[in-house]
Image (cartoon, rainbow, N blue to C red):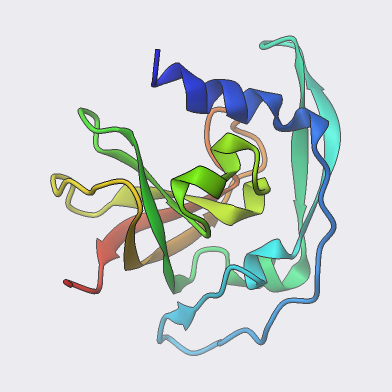
Length: 158
Protein backbone atom coordinates (compact mmCIF):
# COMPACT_ATOMS: atom_id res chain seq x y z
CA UNK A 1 0.00 0.00 0.00
CA UNK A 2 2.83 2.43 0.86
CA UNK A 3 4.32 1.93 -2.61
CA UNK A 4 0.98 2.93 -4.17
CA UNK A 5 0.86 6.31 -2.40
CA UNK A 6 3.63 7.93 -4.52
CA UNK A 7 2.06 6.51 -7.69
CA UNK A 8 -1.34 7.86 -6.71
CA UNK A 9 0.19 11.27 -6.00
CA UNK A 10 1.98 11.24 -9.37
CA UNK A 11 -1.28 10.49 -11.13
CA UNK A 12 -3.15 13.21 -9.26
CA UNK A 13 -0.83 16.08 -10.20
CA UNK A 14 -2.95 16.78 -13.26
CA UNK A 15 -4.90 19.17 -11.07
CA UNK A 16 -1.87 21.33 -10.36
CA UNK A 17 -0.25 24.06 -12.42
CA UNK A 18 3.08 25.87 -12.08
CA UNK A 19 4.76 28.89 -13.61
CA UNK A 20 8.37 28.87 -14.81
CA UNK A 21 11.02 31.30 -13.66
CA UNK A 22 14.17 32.46 -15.34
CA UNK A 23 16.90 29.87 -14.73
CA UNK A 24 20.60 30.37 -14.10
CA UNK A 25 23.54 30.26 -16.48
CA UNK A 26 24.33 27.00 -18.27
CA UNK A 27 27.87 25.60 -18.20
CA UNK A 28 28.88 24.32 -21.65
CA UNK A 29 32.21 22.73 -20.64
CA UNK A 30 32.78 19.00 -20.00
CA UNK A 31 32.70 19.63 -16.24
CA UNK A 32 29.40 18.75 -14.58
CA UNK A 33 26.95 21.64 -14.26
CA UNK A 34 26.14 22.32 -10.62
CA UNK A 35 22.39 22.47 -10.92
CA UNK A 36 20.15 24.37 -8.59
CA UNK A 37 16.54 23.40 -8.08
CA UNK A 38 15.70 26.87 -9.33
CA UNK A 39 17.18 26.04 -12.75
CA UNK A 40 14.89 22.99 -13.07
CA UNK A 41 11.87 25.28 -12.82
CA UNK A 42 12.35 26.27 -16.48
CA UNK A 43 9.41 24.10 -17.48
CA UNK A 44 5.73 24.71 -18.09
CA UNK A 45 2.92 22.20 -17.81
CA UNK A 46 -0.40 21.75 -19.53
CA UNK A 47 -3.08 19.19 -18.83
CA UNK A 48 -3.14 16.25 -21.22
CA UNK A 49 -5.50 13.26 -21.28
CA UNK A 50 -3.83 9.86 -20.95
CA UNK A 51 -6.35 7.25 -22.08
CA UNK A 52 -4.35 4.25 -20.78
CA UNK A 53 -4.87 5.51 -17.21
CA UNK A 54 -8.09 7.48 -17.84
CA UNK A 55 -6.64 10.56 -16.21
CA UNK A 56 -5.47 14.06 -16.97
CA UNK A 57 -1.82 14.60 -16.17
CA UNK A 58 0.61 17.45 -16.54
CA UNK A 59 2.57 17.34 -19.79
CA UNK A 60 5.89 19.23 -19.56
CA UNK A 61 7.36 21.64 -22.06
CA UNK A 62 10.99 22.16 -21.11
CA UNK A 63 12.53 25.62 -21.47
CA UNK A 64 15.62 26.23 -23.60
CA UNK A 65 18.06 26.36 -20.69
CA UNK A 66 16.88 22.97 -19.40
CA UNK A 67 16.90 21.51 -22.93
CA UNK A 68 20.57 22.56 -23.25
CA UNK A 69 21.34 20.43 -20.18
CA UNK A 70 19.71 17.29 -21.56
CA UNK A 71 22.31 14.53 -21.87
CA UNK A 72 24.94 16.59 -20.01
CA UNK A 73 26.73 15.70 -16.78
CA UNK A 74 25.24 17.53 -13.80
CA UNK A 75 25.48 17.64 -10.02
CA UNK A 76 22.48 18.20 -7.77
CA UNK A 77 22.00 18.29 -4.01
CA UNK A 78 18.73 17.37 -2.36
CA UNK A 79 16.85 15.07 -0.04
CA UNK A 80 16.81 11.35 -0.81
CA UNK A 81 13.36 9.76 -0.78
CA UNK A 82 13.13 5.96 -0.95
CA UNK A 83 10.33 4.79 -3.25
CA UNK A 84 11.06 1.05 -3.32
CA UNK A 85 14.00 -0.19 -1.24
CA UNK A 86 13.88 -3.72 -2.65
CA UNK A 87 14.21 -2.44 -6.22
CA UNK A 88 16.67 0.33 -5.30
CA UNK A 89 14.29 3.05 -6.54
CA UNK A 90 14.97 6.51 -5.13
CA UNK A 91 14.01 10.10 -5.84
CA UNK A 92 16.07 13.21 -5.11
CA UNK A 93 13.85 16.05 -3.93
CA UNK A 94 14.32 19.76 -3.41
CA UNK A 95 12.36 19.33 -0.17
CA UNK A 96 12.20 16.81 2.67
CA UNK A 97 9.53 14.12 2.51
CA UNK A 98 7.01 16.12 4.55
CA UNK A 99 6.96 18.88 1.90
CA UNK A 100 7.89 16.92 -1.22
CA UNK A 101 6.13 16.61 -4.56
CA UNK A 102 4.49 13.31 -3.63
CA UNK A 103 2.76 14.89 -0.64
CA UNK A 104 1.39 17.79 -2.67
CA UNK A 105 3.70 20.43 -1.22
CA UNK A 106 5.73 21.06 -4.38
CA UNK A 107 5.68 20.67 -8.15
CA UNK A 108 7.01 17.93 -10.42
CA UNK A 109 10.06 20.06 -11.21
CA UNK A 110 11.21 19.58 -7.61
CA UNK A 111 11.85 15.84 -7.93
CA UNK A 112 14.45 13.89 -9.92
CA UNK A 113 14.49 10.14 -10.40
CA UNK A 114 17.84 8.55 -9.49
CA UNK A 115 19.03 5.78 -11.81
CA UNK A 116 22.23 4.54 -10.21
CA UNK A 117 25.39 3.60 -12.05
CA UNK A 118 26.09 0.99 -9.36
CA UNK A 119 22.91 0.11 -7.46
CA UNK A 120 23.05 -1.36 -4.03
CA UNK A 121 23.62 1.37 -1.46
CA UNK A 122 20.62 1.98 0.76
CA UNK A 123 19.58 5.49 1.75
CA UNK A 124 17.35 6.72 4.55
CA UNK A 125 14.46 9.11 4.04
CA UNK A 126 15.58 12.76 4.00
CA UNK A 127 19.32 12.11 3.79
CA UNK A 128 20.71 15.28 2.21
CA UNK A 129 23.15 14.19 -0.51
CA UNK A 130 24.81 15.38 -3.70
CA UNK A 131 24.71 13.22 -6.81
CA UNK A 132 26.42 13.42 -10.19
CA UNK A 133 24.96 11.90 -13.33
CA UNK A 134 23.54 12.59 -16.76
CA UNK A 135 20.38 14.68 -16.90
CA UNK A 136 17.58 13.14 -18.97
CA UNK A 137 14.32 14.91 -19.77
CA UNK A 138 11.13 12.87 -19.83
CA UNK A 139 7.91 14.17 -21.32
CA UNK A 140 6.32 10.97 -22.59
CA UNK A 141 6.61 8.18 -20.01
CA UNK A 142 3.89 8.89 -17.44
CA UNK A 143 5.28 6.20 -15.14
CA UNK A 144 8.56 8.11 -14.69
CA UNK A 145 9.41 11.58 -13.36
CA UNK A 146 10.07 14.46 -15.76
CA UNK A 147 13.72 14.69 -14.69
CA UNK A 148 15.98 11.66 -14.49
CA UNK A 149 19.58 11.51 -13.26
CA UNK A 150 21.04 8.55 -15.19
CA UNK A 151 24.26 6.81 -14.10
CA UNK A 152 23.91 8.60 -10.77
CA UNK A 153 26.76 8.45 -8.25
CA UNK A 154 26.79 9.93 -4.78
CA UNK A 155 29.50 12.59 -4.34
CA UNK A 156 29.42 13.37 -0.63
CA UNK A 157 30.13 10.71 1.95
CA UNK A 158 29.09 12.41 5.23
